[in-house]
Length: 304
Image 1 (cartoon, rainbow, N blue to C red):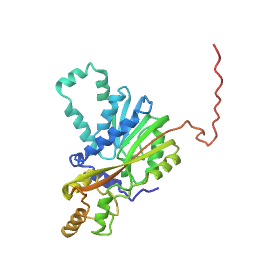
Image 2: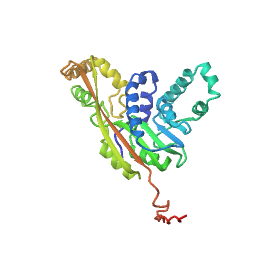
Image 3: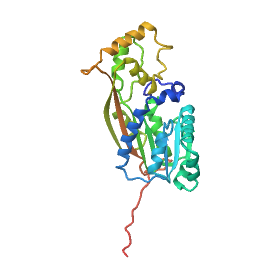
């Protein structure tokens, strides 16, 4: 199932400049905080976890604080983002910090316990049942086939392992979508997937008890140029059907005029972000690989 005609090659190119993407990191940190609050409600002690779409590995560092003994994996389609994350971690360690790390087991695990992989979400270079937790923060909407991604994530999760993710929903950037409609008929904003469709995909992929939630966050701006700068920092437009090349000067001016129509009562421009949250578990297998049913017998415990 295609969510949109997204070019993964173009996604890698759009995320090749870590400095540009970093300008929108305030949103990823906020959503990560909200996801961790949800994760605290789940009793789980993973021996290994995967951050799918780890970028500069900020979420991995936070998860390692909660699960210091867990083996950490990070996967991202952009080698540039992974490299920037590794470099940032190295730069953050002072000479004194590296010295004290020799006597700090958790620090040693964080230094040697991260495996960063540059790969497609739907083709992970990981063994079956590798981790107990898969975490993905604002990354799933960049993949054209989320149903295949869910199937792959289920493969690498251990039985009763947890998947927790966030991504953008259909009302994301609706103001920008309307403004571009005044410029041309080409697609400039992704047609983000509805959370109910994600729920159906999770069930079809073999996950149990999926829980979907949604909230809308409104960002405000004084000038349309800053709004467009943040949109580009969030990843831009990776559609294969997008316009080739930059907007012409007149088209860009029409876009700015169209955005100006969206000022609120306080005189600020608004940008809506629909954030979808989901979590689900990999259930105990009820069939063998050959399709045979597994019947489990729970024998009564002997009384002492």
